Each structure stands twice: as C-alpha cells, then as structure tokens.
Length: 154
Ligand code: SF4
Ligand code: SF4
Image (tube, rainbow, N blue to C red; front, side, top):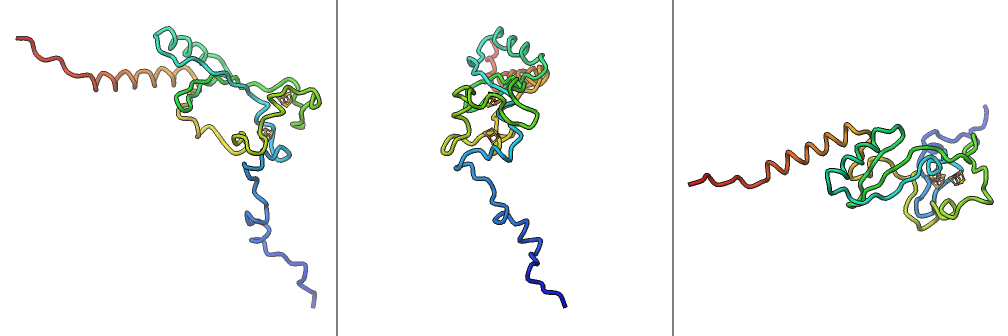
C-alpha cells in the first residue's frame, strides 16, 4: 500500500491563507501584476463650471483612449496609453533611470495601487462623450424638477 504522506488536500492548496494574498499595506505586488500603472497617466482638471468647460470635456471624450473621472469632487482626465519604455514582459526598460513618480508609486504605506483597485471605485466615470452628455442632461432635468415653481401672476 502506498504512503499518503505527500498528499495535500486541494482546499488547502487553494485557500487564501495558502496563497498569501497580496496586502495593499505592503505595497504593490509588481511581480504578479501586468504593469497596470505603466499603461496610463491622469491629469487633474479644473472643476467644470461653464458651458464652455463642459464642451471641452465633451471634446476630450471624443478621443480614443481618453476617460474622465471624478473622485471626491476632483476631476481628472486619464490618457490610457502605455509608456514607451514598458517591455513586452511588463518590466520597465529604463528601470535605473525611471522618473521619480514611478519610483514612488505603489510603495508600502502609500495609497493602494491599481492592483488593488478598479474603475468601480470612481464616484463618476465617463468613457465617452455620449455618457457625459447623458449625465449633463440628467443633471439638468434634476435641477429643473427641483426649481421652485413661479407663483401665478395677479
Ligand atoms: S505598483 Fe501596483 S499597479 Fe504598478 S506594477 Fe506594481 S502592482 Fe502593478
Ligand atoms: S518609465 Fe518604467 S516604471 Fe515608469 S511608466 Fe515607464 S515603464 Fe513604467
């Protein structure tokens, strides 16, 4: 009869404890990641207030690879394009000379990087101009409904 000493039940092999789930407190597990943070950059926008501001955002969103999102009242334009120095195996091609922002990102104690987050965490996300126009119209309709009715003259 053969020994069963080397047998490990499947549920133990695949339990979260056995897999050592990455912990955002310890920083990004870059060796497990497909370099999500090297595939975009985002710039903060002034909060749009005028018709012209809205028209600019609509225009940004007409472009491929552009999204706009809002988080805690702050507006951002995100350019979804990969860094030219990202290698096919997801490593940095200029590691020793990479910008400081790349060095600081995803470190222990910093905000969790994209490995731990996703689009669902935005307060609002616009992926194209049609979504933005629909949002503006819904906002306009809500404002109209909430506006006090004028008293009849006389
Ligand atoms: S910092 Fe985070 S998102 Fe960037 S490569 Fe490492 S794990 Fe991935
Ligand atoms: S320089 Fe390197 S670390 Fe920075 S975004 Fe480009 S590939 Fe990523």
